[in-house]
Length: 257
Image 1: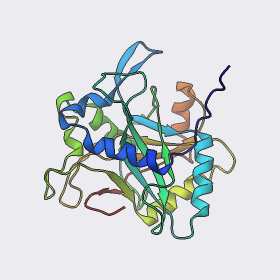
Image 2: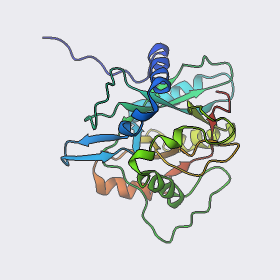
Image 3: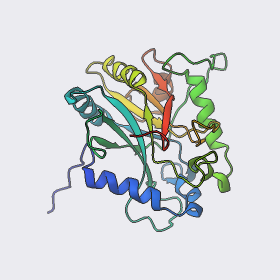
């Protein structure tokens, strides 16, 4: 009897690079179909919006962050699974974001963590919460607005947020880099949980493109307690005082990794 292959906590550099390369080479007309998956539990095709690192992955992320000699910062790369052939609504989406932690001396495709699709994501629903943002983090209400804008984008327009419509016409976004200061706050947010289970989410969002941010796609990073997959507990976790959201990332291009 064959032993079940152990799930790796992070990607090796070749796999990481392959995910990024396949994303760049995907035909523009195929992009909209990448953002649907079949939720077996609900017997329902859904627009994908949320991905996460589980507690084991986050523990390894913390270890890698501490091992860096320089100032650590985070990036969210966009990736595509091997073997995509136009299949619509697979049970596990072919599109996958990758969370990376690195410093200025790191190799480009190191310390990459492949996020898992969450078929039943939750968002804060307090109608009285302000959408005002702090110097580094944003409110849960603001995060919800980005995700909601993504979800209400028409199917035929789903590829538009990833293609530049400003001075870098014809370019497709590769990744998003969080500033050193915001990355420091993300690291602190994760550390605040100590040894308690924690998840790091990346939610797909959409904002407004401007000359310095020529792509309207906006990933939102969330740090929250890992309470498993019970919907009620997940909604309560969104209201936890230690839950935080981050959105102030810059696209690559025009930024450098």
